Structure formats: structure tokens, C-alpha cells
Length: 327
Image 1 (cartoon, rainbow, N blue to C red):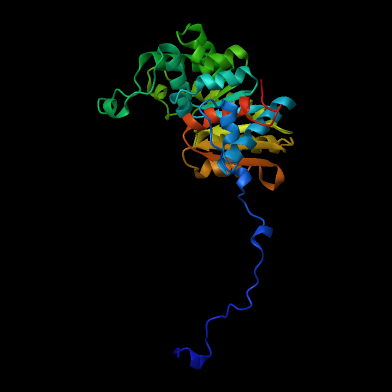
Image 2 (image 1 turned 30 degrees about the vertical axis):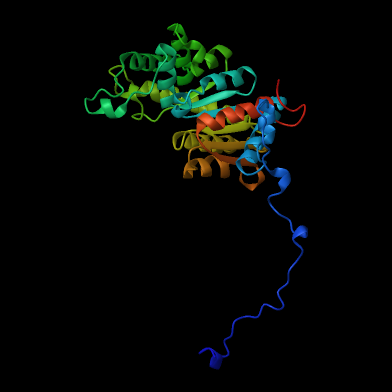
């Protein structure tokens, strides 16, 4: 006899538990959503259609579908990117998508300017910080600093944004690898390229030619230009945040509030965050807050950019239902 019997405390009986047939229960996963094996001669489209229609794959397909919709509606598809996107060799894919109408604007943090310019100039970037920091040589490449600082000064004099000013300056230098540069591609195609710097975060800011007033003026112009692109998201546009955990999520949120403060509608749009981990600011300032209350839809896709962005590009160009994929 249990010591609790005298208090009338006994384990609940299970005789009257209500159950139901398994086949009648709504479930989140079905065999129709499972992955399918591939043959040695399978095509890329076969591969995409063989992926499990579950979790991240479902989100990726949804983002691609909204991007195809945005293009068909002539609504912006804005790519907000961090420097890691350039360092992982994704510029050729983004340029190709730009040429196909899947990039309406690029918003970049300061590190993108550094890495993209260096790729264009010499075909390499991303120095070994550990090996150069001790000697104070980190970030001291003369070509990079002079180009960025001169572009900021010229842009401030002409009331240009930093992205446009740098794209123009870079093309004028006749870089050897211009075809691999996002800055060059955007400038040539007249696609807005906005640059958003926090002064002191980028290597060009400690070069002798650096001018804080010019950097501030040109990046503020770009903030207002990006805000106009965000305004145009209303009714079907897409904003992607790829590889920026702090700067661009904060900038995007301020663009959203500026647009709504001025009385413009901002509804029925899509946001997505692509990164290694889902950090607070992208999840809150990009995926959740701007789209809350039924204003839009937000997605988060976790993984290495060198895998997820090619998958996104492939889904855009080869995935989708019959007749839905882009040519």
C-alpha cells in the first residue's frame, strides 16, 4: 500500500482516455513530402523536385515563388548583403540574376565595398587578419583606401550616394575583373546600389584620405534612396537580408518606419533572412516586425551562403511548377 493512500492520493486511471484512429489525425509530415532518390543522369530540375518539401526547402520554394511574382508584377527585389556574400564567390550568381530581372536593387554594408572593389581591381580579397594585425598592416592596402575615400568625396560634392559614386569610380579605373563586380554590374545596368556604412567599421576609414563628412553625406543619401525602393515593395515586392547581422537589419527597419511615417502603404511584401545562424536583429527587424499584423510574410533560412544562395538561384531558374520557372 502506498503511503499516499491515507490521503486519498492515487495515480490517475487510464481506462477512459479518449483516442482516435491514426489515419484521421492531421499531421505535419506526409510521405508525399519525402525526398526522392536521384539517378546518375538526373537533371538540376530533377534534383530540385526531389528535395523533401519540408521546413527549409518549403521556405526556399516560397521565397523563390514570391520573387517570381515580384518580377511579374514589376515590383522590387532588393538584395541586402554583407561582405561574406562577396567573399564566398557569389557575385557571378547575383549578377546573372540581376540580368534576368531578379535583382532590382542592392543594399550593402561597408565590407561589401571593400571586398567587391578588391575583386574588381586584382581578382582577390580577404586578407589574413591574424597575420597582419600585430604589425598594424591590416586594412592598409593603398589602392582600396584611395579608391573608396576619393569616391566618397566626389559623391558628396555631386550629391550622389556612396554606392553610385564608388561604382562610377571603380568603372573609371578600368578594373581587370569588372565582370565579377557587383558595383560595376549595378552601375552599368542602372540598378540602384546603396551603401550603408557605420564610420569606423571599415578599413578605408583610417586611411589618410578618409573624410567623415563625405562618408556620412553619401551614406545618408543612400539611406533615403533605399527608403524609396522599400516604399515600392508595397503590393508584391521582396527584401532579402543575406549575411548582415546588424547594420542592414537596422537600416531596413528605419526605412520601413520612414515609409510608413510619410503615409505610404507598405503591405503584401516578403522578407527573408539567409545566414549561418538566426540572430536577433535579422529575425526581429527583417523577418518579424515589418511584416507583422498581416502586412506581409517573413522567412528565415539557415545555412552557408555558398550553398543556400546557389540553391535559391537554381530554384528561381529551374524549380517551380511546370511553366512557372524562369527562362
